[in-house]
Every structure is written in C-alpha cells, then in structure tokens.
Image (cartoon, rainbow, N blue to C red; front, side, top):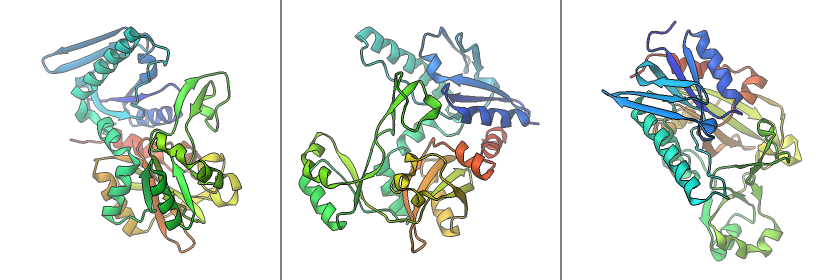
Length: 337
C-alpha cells in the first residue's frame, strides 16, 4: 500500500491500451488512478480551473475528471501531445484551440514536479533526432554517419561517401493523424483514422533521378547499416528490457521493422558498458522512460538509431513476458522528491 497522496494521473489518448495496463498495475499497489483523456478535453469539454492559496484544481465535465494538486502523487505523461486544430478551421477556432492549450498547459506546469514519467517539456526537447545523434556521439555511443540537408550537391557527396548505401528518415513526428474511413497502414489501434508519414527506407535510383525534390525541406540521411537484427531497449529508471527483433528474416522489415507486425523476437542483454552510456544519455534530459532502437551488426556491434521518448512497449511485454507495465507503475507509486 502507498501513502497519501495516493492519486496517480495518467494523461493519454482514448486509443492507448498502454495506459490501461499501467493503471491496473498502479491499482494493485493500492493507488487511485485518474485517466485524463487529452483528446476528449479538446472536443467540447466544460473546464473549470481554480487557483487559490497555491492549490490547483481542474474539473472537466466531459470526462468527469476532477484533479486537485494536493491529492496527486505523480503524473504519467503517456501522451501529452495536443491535437492539431482541423485544417479547415477558421481563425476563431484556432484561437479556441490556442486558449484550451494554454489553460491545460498552465495547469500542468503548476504541477511540473509531479511528473514522474516523463516531464513533457523535457520530452519535447529530447524528442529530436538531430539532438539525439549529437548527444549519443558525445557520450560514446556508436551512431551511423548522418547528414541533414536540402542541398542536392551535398547529398550526392554524402551518398558517394557511403558507397551509395543510404537511408532517408523522417525528422518530425512519425505520424500525423486524420479521421477517415480508410484502414491505416500498420496502426491497428487507430482503425478509424489514417496515419500519415513515412518509414525509414533506402535511397533508390529513382530518388537520385529526382534529387531536386529535397530542396523543399531538409531531410535526414544516414549510412545504411547492414544488420543481423534490430534491438529495442525499453528503459524505465535504471531497468532496461531489451528485445532482439528478427527483422532480417523478412524482406519488408529489413530496413524498418515497423513495416511488419508479429516479427519473432527473443530476450537480449545489452553490454554493461552500453547500459551505462544509455542511462547517461537519457539522464541528460532527466528521462525516466524511453524506447531505444539499435542495429546489431554481424560483428556484434550495436549502432544507435534513436530514442522514442513515448514509445510503445505492450507488444514486447506480451511477446517476452517482460514486466514493463509493473516497472512503470512501481516508479509512479514509489516515494520521490
């Protein structure tokens, strides 16, 4: 049983089964759990935010949520990304969204010390592939050769330097969501919406023929790393749960394992030296959670690709019986400053 205050707040969206799993584990420790559905907050809720004598309370009628700062033990920002204003919105609608964002952000900023996994403001700073590559290199984690450019001539130099073996990666969020009747690609949890974005893929001869297309926006290019498997390491505090994903057994997942569901995997243990470096890396931004991706090469080297600060992990927990939900719940209910 935990001591008071005993309320755990989980901020998430309505599609996220990860939040439900963590909530059940928190309840098993004797905690009261309140789910704050951030997407429903933006869809017509009545809001009452009361600030007095350094106590903060937020009531949202659509979700029947009543949060009082003094009763909150910790906050889990599973999904703290605010929905975009619809593209066909008029100026008053954009102002409405901006005001809602400001109200919600202000409330949670007053409770910034309650965020346990993770601070959303630290997350947003850390969730940048360029920054991550730079930080990983400084700490001594091996990374691929990397170039960000919209200059065709500079890209060609890089392409030749990498023996014409290069991948292109999306710099921004991996998917933008739009309501549709179409089935999304590889996103079963949002079956009534469509995900836009692109997977990591190898640069082809057709891409080279149309190289001037990169002038419209900077692109991230990296040397292609031949690998025997992908490694996904889920970090909670100082615990690391690593899975070896047999992505090279299937043509569609050779470059990006996200292209195929249900890839066989097995438990894997990171070298002790890399574990230490990885914890140092996440410690730069005081992150208690991240899902980190590596390539495992034929020479048994591990090459870092990126850290997803709000990555999914239920698929790994289910496949390998990792106690990830339990580790997150324990972190939320334990004593902390």
